[in-house]
Length: 148
Length: 211
Image (cartoon, rainbow over all chains, first blue to last red):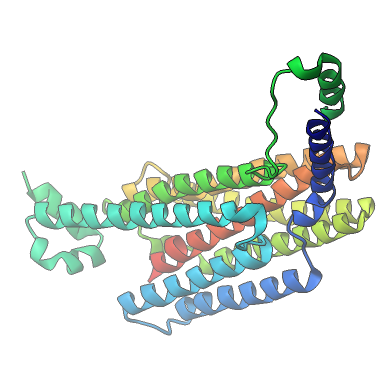
């Protein structure tokens, strides 16, 4: 019984210790961390805006890839420097739930686009000039009107 | 708590119900931050659905105006700057909080709120301008998707601002108590999360929209 008691009080002490250094478990922000994130995010925002506004890349697929790349890098910068993301906080559960979400988001968005564009391509009478139809706003409209 | 249990156990002697104590709790002592993070991730899934919708409908102009004709990139760049600035000023508020400086925290929170209001004001101006031009959400599938996606983000910012004001009042009244610190951590995550979503919005909606 006495062993049991000491165990219980041990546990009690343990819980206290937990609470005390819990503040240290919370992500600790630093000035240099925030400034690094801020400067990086300004650079990563300015470049894509400049690329589009100064019409640097004219080829659309290339531009989409480059802009998407900048967005992904900037999201990572925000995650690390502003949201203090790493594998340690909350025993790694934060990172795990984020990875799950990223996978889900990727499947949802690419899956939706893939299915819907294929459906469009297969149902439109003018599916052979699909890229052209995507460029001009009036054309898909005319195509759907002509369908019945 | 365990003091009471111990005395009870001593009084009841050997007949006390058996108790089990794990040496290590399998979960963190306080799961608030993880729980709030999970909420943000579920919010992320909502935005994923809206982004996917915009991706599908974003080129269905119904013979109406397209992104290149409607979007003013200078305005969007200024708006993005407001949101980035509000993110770093929230960071400064968190640094003040760590020092236990109530006044400094409140000042930086107020600056954050100011930039948030600027962002929201500019977005409302843009929406008003678009509707005035006849490019409202009813005009085409593209504009419906646009207003839903950007409007949902704007609504989040609005609720973030309301939360910010309420929290400032609470800090003013009770100081930087553990409860208020916890709330600040959550709002900080919420605010930076909105910034992350905005990166997706300005890249996929505005920049790719005018290409």
